[in-house]
Image (cartoon, rainbow, N blue to C red; front, side, top):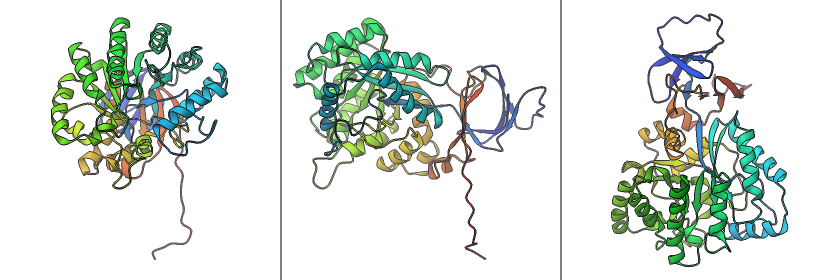
Length: 419
């Protein structure tokens, strides 16, 4: 396959992309004559090409369960956790049921150009129904998407009976990363210990770490400092991710200044979930209501790795969602006051290369010679327009094959507005 007249994201020059088998063989300068020589030729006419989108944080085992046993009326994180706990008691879901919902959710994401997904799976249930289902989905959908699985103790490592043992067993079963939720543990001391336990297990089993960290509006929730300090001491910061960290939006600046020095030194990654956390946070505030996001702009400007994710598709924590990360980017830029021109032009890094770094898959990722022929094509010739208009992904190509294709809508105004 030869992809003609492609505009690589973030570059001004046009190139031709020559694909042999499942690899990008060459990136040819625009002036190079292109002959088919038996190759399929796709002429993009200057459309933007970029590496596949990366979803760094979603809950596939929860997907499409909103409203059962009932809807989250308060919109809070803690009602969501309570509803999920009730659902586990009332709905004896089978592995087949979980797989069906997870595949439906992944199909939504694949349609929108996502080829790498990190999903958290609740392991605070002794039968491991969700984990077993997602381990099978991971293998079955390999031709379309790479799935990383985080063993996530939704109801706590210590707040849930035998939570620590369940977490360790999940890692033995094949989970890729260790999760945690320290702000949900019964005490500050249990929260600190849960972070240390997660890192100890990751070190023991050679796993990644992704902690639901400080997803609360409480300015005294400061487990991110514990996570960063422990990661620094163990020299494993690149393998560690702090997800949410919404309390950081409530920290006073004196503490935040001190904290940022540690965060920078630790080299940990950050995932912000703009749509879900704008929905969940600030619920018990009167006015002014907090935005409920971490300090995305400040972390980014300090040189730390930050990416955006969706978090949920129709579950007890978030009633909407369709797998489209472009919508997440648009909302995140607004909520983070990142609507300067340069922020807009580089915004898709938040769901591509930054996400790849978070998932620890940066090596071999990107539209470069010698890499796997994995890429997406947006229906636009402008990085700025990619955010302004949110155009569809017209092609998603994986290992040299088109796995998803969207034909853009065409609108005709029948009566001319201007003569």
